[in-house]
Image (tube, rainbow, N blue to C red; front, side, top):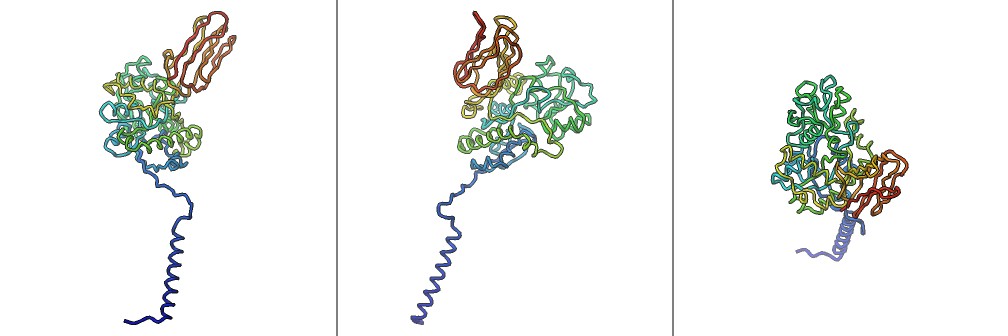
Length: 422
């Protein structure tokens, strides 16, 4: 064996020192700087959605980084109906689905344990501002909802949101809800079906609604949602109960991100329009809100049961958990004063308001008396109209838990009422 000389030892030591020095440099260059924040890996959430404008806050939220800020990466899958999405989730083809409240109820009552993760949107207030209406051809003889009797209307799915709101609205307008024929067609196919005479009318959301109006010359003959109530609930984001239980933190973060996206979308409509196909930017946009009106949801559930879409009412506590619902509501309260001297009332969804959810409300006061006014008082609220003036006043108020009273401030014994927010 050859013995190294002292010179060889010296040269070898220098080489080893150089290698160690270079290696150390490589380690330093490839390692993060001391104290630099470590970026956590994003959790992928697969969201099943629909090809309609309603789901665009999800896209906007992705672009704005709302989801990544909450540690979530979204993977989208597009299906054609809420029922398709419920079945996909039941087969574990997706984690969360953007879906109408009616399919959620169907799933829950048929043994698919759906639970709401977050809200999404509500309908408008009239035929002129609503984004989801019944269209007929411009040349059609159908002029009123009554003319729909005996006609065929396209909906995106049978036993879904469309069937329930159409039949309920027809009944409310005095039309036999069983006198119409419903045909299931995907939303993108409806315009050509109407043009070709395959159907007499179509129930469509945006952007298909504006395309029918502006490109095909169609007419709106009915707005089912606003017929049933202002800001009537439409859809939200749901998942299987087991998925939520196993991914509680992810579900909570998703809700925070989509709530932020909904609020941003509602206040930045031009950015939503920028996501729409060319030529469809001037559409009617939904009313996006993270808030939920539980009373109107119950009304919707009762309609679904009445028209045979569900056999029994769903368990609201399980379908709409308090973590999503509590502390949030959106809705309309309508107050009427006069003309009778003892007449003052506050209604929600057509009935006297007695117990409502806390949250944000539009309160419309119709004062028809020059001797009475409407004075609302409760936690954080003290608002009143003029005693001597008549007219319509609108207040946007947040109502917290507690007892609220309303009365007139005129002289002598005055009419009054009360309701509880809880």
